[in-house]
Amino acid sequence: MSEELPLSLRQKLLKEMLRAYSSKLSKKEQKPQSPRDIVMSMLSDERGREILEKATRLYPEATEYALSIIAKLIEQGVIKSLDAITLLTLLNRLGVPVKPDIKIKFVKRGGREVSFKEYVED
Image (cartoon, rainbow, N blue to C red; front, side, top):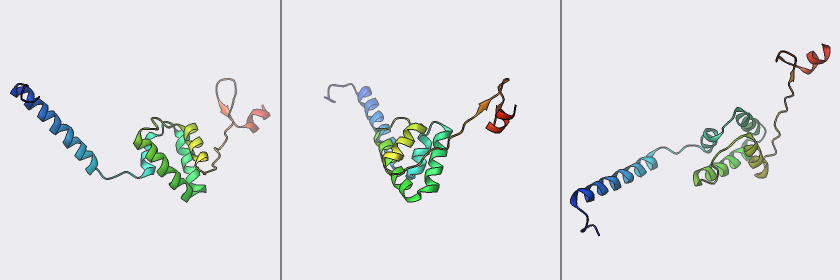
């Protein structure tokens, strides 16, 4: 088949193959990221970071194990995006029973957020 192609086209194909091969090699040579870094880079919101910090504070060993599994799923392409709800569900399913902090905010007329005590006083 390569005999049928013109010389210039064969050269272009060969250059493209070499470029693709060298980019694969450079990706393999990069130092591997920790599972925590992989998961943190995929988190799309601040709430997910808060949940991850709380899980690490309460269950450090179990969280590291769960993060290694989640990182493998990200690398395999099973997980495409990761938000707080998805992270919380995955952690609970993998045996890290973390509960998110509940924040109730009251908004007064004018759009100002106040605590419950201030809201009731007025």
